[in-house]
Each structure stands twice: as structure tokens, then as C-alpha cells.
Image 1 (cartoon, rainbow, N blue to C red):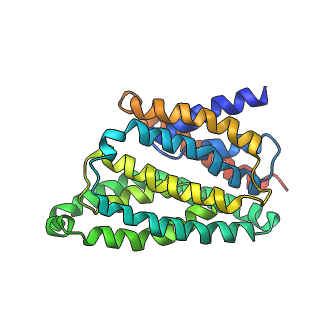
Image 2 (image 1 turned 135 degrees about the vertical axis):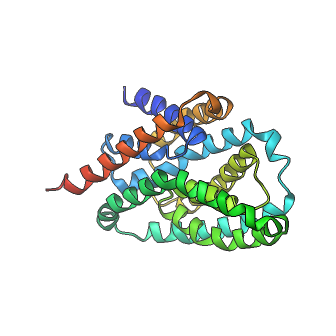
Length: 255
């Protein structure tokens, strides 16, 4: 029964990430209900989300081919930052991480809640930055900005996609599906690097991760293909509610 719930939850998480983002704000508390620690649930989330990110990118493959090859430079800060973030995670005591989790979840929820306002603010300023966007400078600046974000992604990661979307808004890429696939590919590089760095750490619950990851792959592809058919507003409210509830529960569960 647990395996079925995890698989179905993985489908929902993958679809959420493809449509509105923030899927692990739902997936994380579901993992906690299995009895594993927040530290293991966090490390396992990398195994869960990678298949969905790759299947979403595949669904958007037509748009991926249109992205200039210069953006491959983003792989470098993504890998280096993820290595650093995962190293910090591996050396964080389980009890200390458990104390940090409510704050990390609330931070991710705030990023998710304010992402539409951030998106509008970015595009409002784009009218005065036309020459800047047409040059290659935004790509180099994005490389610098991605480094600390990749560190965060290697350590916790929930909500990093929202910041990526805002950063990409300053580049010459403005077609929404190209933005989505570039975000998914950067996130996939960070998550894949984290998984490699976590090998041998015994922090990943491979059984739960692979079951939920299989569902995530299905949901990620389906969500990317049918993204325009769902109400992102309703999903956004659901994710915010679950995230805040989870953070409050983790704060008070030991008292």
C-alpha cells in the first residue's frame, strides 16, 4: 500500500513541477509519513525529481534544440555549486538538519508564493534592457548567479526553480517553453550531481526514491504535455497550504 501511495504521489509531484513548480513541497511531507528522517527524505528527493525533470525536458525537446549552445556554460556553475551544497549536506548532523527543515520549507514556500510577482517585476524591467538582453552578457551573469543557487540546490533545493525562472527572464530567451526546458535542464544537472555525491553516504532511501521517481517520470512528461489544461492558481494555493502546514507540524511535533 505504501508503495502505491508513493508511486501515485510521484505522478502528482512530477505533474506539479512541470505545470507550476514546487512539487516536492508536497512530496517531502509524504516521504516523512513513511517514518524516514528529514535528512534522508531530503537526500532521497534528488532521486525522485530527476526522472521527472528529464521526462519534462524530453517533452519539450523541440524547444530545447532552439536554445543557443552558449547556454551550455551554465553546466559548470551548476555542477560545482551542487558538489559544494551536497558536501555541506553530508556533513550536517541529522538532528541539526531536522531543526533547519521548517525554516527551509518556509523559505521555499515564500519563493513559491512570490514567484508570480517576481516574474512580473522582471518582465516590467525588460523593456528598458533590450540591448542588454540581446548581448551575451546575461549568460555570463547568469553563470555567476547560478553558483550560489546550485549550492542551495545541492543542500535542499526546494524552490530553486522559481529563482531560475526569474534569472532566465534577464536573458534573450523569452519563449515560455524554452524557459521551462532550460530551467528543467539546469535543475537536472544539479540533482544528478547531488546523487553522484551522495553515493555511499547511506542517506538515500533507494526503494522509496525509485518508486516515487518512476511516478515522477510519468507525471513530469504528462504535465509538460498538458501544462496549459490545468489551473496553476489552484495548484499554487494547494502547495502553499501543504508547505506551511508541514513546516508548522515539524516545528511542534517534538513538543
